[in-house]
Image 1 (cartoon, one colour):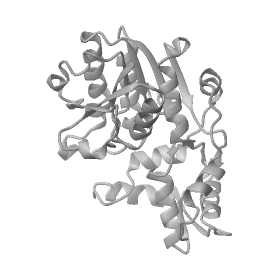
Image 2 (cartoon, one colour):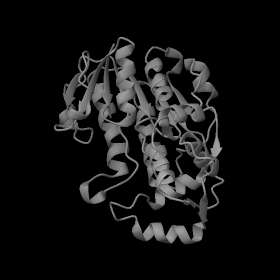
Image 3 (cartoon, helix red, strand yellow):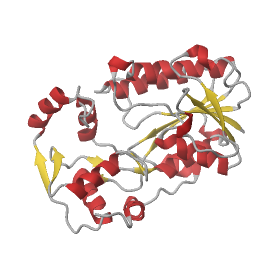
Length: 301
């Protein structure tokens, strides 16, 4: 099957492309000119130049494809550069949906996010909800996945925490650290996308996607610490009433690693019931502890 992939240069996208090729599919990856070097040079992968925010660039790009896997997403806005949740999530999805409909590509598999709802507390979640509604209102045969925090060798979240544990004698924790997270391996997330292409029962379904284990943030730090060979991770908990105004004042600095929206989503937790996803696609999620131990084995601590 020829599969049109957006977001293929990203962390999840590269794994989806790898698994598409392994399953005998032919991925055609949409990339902006100048970004093609981020893709692997492998046989069977073709490149289509374009931009999800520019509808004219999508004309004819999907004509020989039978399905779309739409992965484009951002976790932080840079409004001065035109990088906003609304533009990338809602409008970008609307543009890809319109292109798929006009070019007779009937199957559409979409990556949303766990925690999405209409009246969500953050613009990130609201824009993801609006993107889902665009797809639901289309004539396409769609499937929506809503992953929790995704981990893997190239992820930003767990690798950043690991770096803090390596470098700092005491790791700062925002709030009490008792909010829960159910991280899911990138390989398992990608497996669901690839399997959905040939699973008619998944059409019209929305799947929350989480790992099999959930941890408090405190426990997550301990798990990563053990994977790095640390017997103990010392933590300093900072009250949210002090953290929130600090983050609000510094979030506009590009080098500052956190925004107010990201803080809100972090302390709200990120867990779900993954059993429908596991059962429909035959996925047994990897153990977080085992996977990160393998990931960090041999890494200096």
